[in-house]
Length: 426
Image 1 (spheres, rainbow, N blue to C red):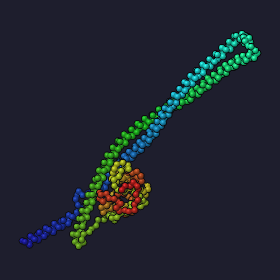
Image 2: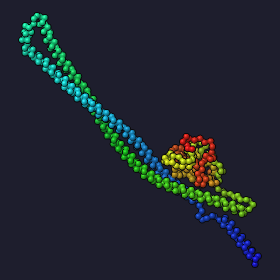
Image 3: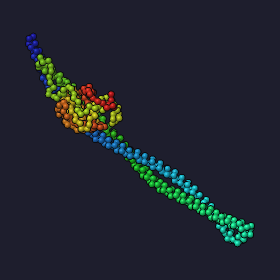
Image 4: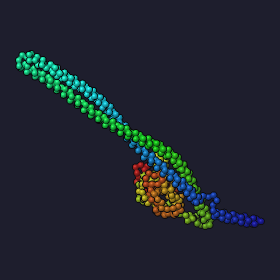
């Protein structure tokens, strides 16, 4: 009985061992994460990214219009201030000419009064001589003690008459000159008033344009605010999608590690003398080292770390190196692997991500165009796209990231000989 019991126990242990091996060889967990699930999530995220990019384009266009209208309004404001200042100076000048014209009018009146007085004096003298001509002449002869006195008296009378005539002429000339000056003042005042009327009409038109620009600016601000709210919603949706992708990638990495460990154990059980090992099941695996992704340029415009974002103006973490290459420059795969993202991806714009199969991922952002597709295997140094400025970008450059799972790594740990812009960061 003891022997039979031992044999039965041995048989049961053998069955358990075989079942363990068989079960271990079966597919793991029905709820395990698969690459297709991640790809589906990425497609959903890409749709959100496309919607966000379209919304961002609307916001950018509205902001550009706002900047143009604001600049135009500022120019109109400057012109309006200049016109108002010119109108004020014209009003002051017109007021001065009014005073000068009034003064000249008084001078003309005074000159005309003197002229009338002198003329009346002259006429009175002549009329008296005409009325008393004979008596006056006889009295002059009788009163003269000699011919010399008579001639002298006659000359005196002539000089008086000539003086009266000369004074009258001078008064007339002075009055005419004053009237000419007054007329000149009035003519120039009329020109100023005409110019003032033109400036007043121009100022009214400028104010109308300023009011119109102000209304447009307010409308654009409302549109920008409304679209910014929509953009914020899309950004939140994209962030949530990226968070889920990161979680799935982390889960996939964990599953890969478990699968690798299971295969190692299976290989060890089947071949105890092998001491472990195994393979990746034919999946594409990188070399473990990286080549520079932009052969034409090693100039770094922004490093990994916190910085003031050039577009949003916020203090944010910058997760990669910005390489200041020219538009259209070639971008190559930093290592061999499988393309997991190839399309619009939110702020990254046209973006490629490569899974190198050894826990490392690389990401390439802001491309002008993409030369690979999702699921494609690429070799180290193969062209995957070209430098551009898509997404949230202020100019052509390549945004390059290295990740280990969901952990962001600094590419400078792998590369030397780089040069840096003065404001690239520490």
